[in-house]
Image (cartoon, rainbow, N blue to C red):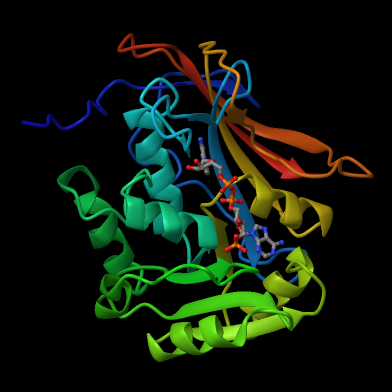
Length: 280
Ligand SMILES: NC(=O)c1ccc[n+]([C@@H]2O[C@H](COP(=O)([O-])OP(=O)(O)OC[C@H]3O[C@@H](n4cnc5c(N)ncnc54)[C@H](OP(=O)(O)O)[C@@H]3O)[C@@H](O)[C@H]2O)c1
């Protein structure tokens, strides 16, 4: 039997002004968010990391990277879902859909249909939003399959790739119902070209729910507007892991400005802090 997570304990505002405790539920759902960013839609991402910077570690048996319970946290997951409720489109990756097939992904693409998140579906309805955000997938290889459930939910699925993408895989994804768009040539999708295309599709808010390589592509292009980062006050160590951005060194590096910070001291595990940063 699974128990619903406890969202009842409040969080403490630390920055920009320390204040009285606030409910966890609604913290990001009711936060003022922009609807325009550097290249059209406002692009935001969210990670949960340990104090030693791990967002994922290799499973001892398979060696595959994943987010174990020692890193992920149900209260952080609630905020992740609240941010998803605010999105017109979720940015995902080929890797996510490969993991999904292997049962290694953290959850199905939000919004979760589980009971603790039902209020978020009601909220979207009240805002006049589609039941689920659409999906945009960055992939160069196109080596993944799309679950039929995405289309049953009425979601538009756009695959953002390069001119060099394999034709056969492209046709297969189109036949399954996706729009496949080559946004530039070269070996990888450029973050600015990807986000500009999402703007052309009419999206105002794009939420990158995938990992460190997509984040790096967005950062390199200056296409990320806001980063939400949960840091658990916990150290896990381990040799094989991933951190929030991977790949070649960013030159210049990306500087961020703290916009808000909450301390979560609910006593149910490690403390954690919920930060929101604007990309400078
Ligand atoms: N703790 C957290 O908050 C958190 C958040 C997100 C992810 N994670 C975890 O982080 C781990 C590592 O994720 P990951 O390394 O696989 O990163 P990722 O960025 O999610 O996915 C990498 C894949 O995205 C595609 N991609 C990325 N940038 C691209 C570009 N510029 N152009 C075209 N395609 C691009 C490629 O797909 P193709 O290979 O198909 O070309 C690439 O293999 C996973 O275990 C995940 O669960 C943790």
